[in-house]
Image (cartoon, rainbow, N blue to C red; front, side, top):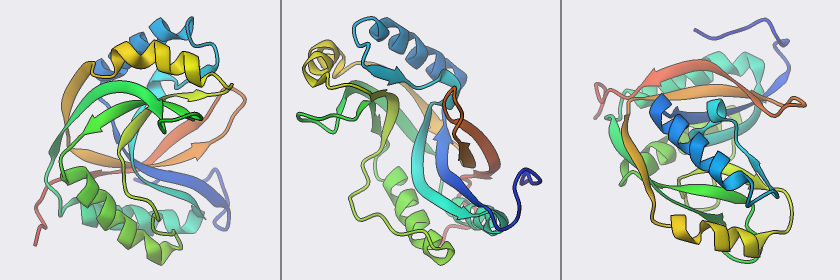
Length: 200
């Protein structure tokens, strides 16, 4: 059920659609981040509870559209089967001189890309622009605050092929993102099951 009452119907809310991680993988990634923190002081690490795999970033949408967006997500998710996701490797992203994040690699075959493409298309009716770049799934473990590209590459090199774990994606969460002095707060507005029941 959608949560309401915190904002007026005409307010813009920042939103995204993502696959949430099981607790054991959150713990594993949190432990990795803690181990890297002393060597990479120029990185702001993602809070363990905020770790997720973005399928579609919507940005600002009208609050009174969130119910229809959630319903559209549920309708589309029902067309897609659950799929396996494997997390492998920790690297600077994008590669090169000015990486912006510490990223965990995501292997999901074509399933996640197909889900993204479908949602990318269906969100246009809510004023959300389609992605101009190719979809490259990854998980943001941390954000680079300072110019530490050399240190980043050196520290992360041994982790480039580290297998972190795997799980089956069974649902997609539609969430609101709110900024706070302690970092972003993510509030799920609804969750949609990947069932394949309505596949055509």
